[in-house]
Image 1 (tube, rainbow, N blue to C red):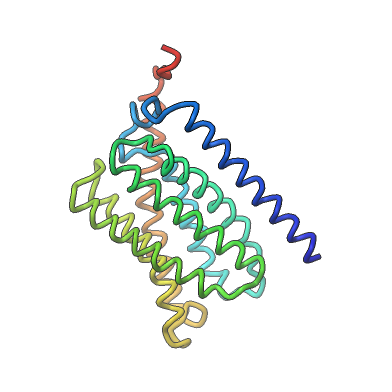
Image 2 (tube, rainbow, N blue to C red; image 1 turned 90 degrees about the vertical axis):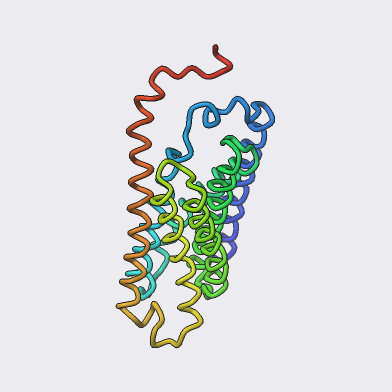
Length: 235
């Protein structure tokens, strides 16, 4: 049984490597200067913000019900899907820089951190490992998000700097809260304190709501704004 499970994860890892190689080949074949994002997207209307919405809702559901559940494996699929998409899309942005200037740092690298965190959590849940080291990673990844959120508001980045900044900050606080709960006395841990779990869920859902406002509004607007778009190589 253990050997079969190991083979499955080897296949998953192999698929991730293939996807990474495909993205690298795309980056070499088509430079970032011809990117759709560089020409037409704005920093506040990125189409994959929905990934944060889905991931944060999955995490909120796990915090509320999964932490106290005997069988945590039902949450593995949700964490894995979110993590895989986050790592692949985040790496693409970090390696090719399709957005203007520092927006690649603002959106690309945090997406990699977010996706890696979810993949690590999925593996830990599947193997029934202790989640404390994942929580440590979550703290520092969350700290990055908080710093970026403050800087977004400070520099007035994106079309809605306050809204986007709050989205980063609340998302980051969700990760930082996980590690802090591991350090606190068991009486105030997420597992034993229903009130603390509710607070965590509300923070995560508030962040998901902000990203939903940004992301789904982008989908609505992009249908119109890209209706007459012609790729540079086809002109």
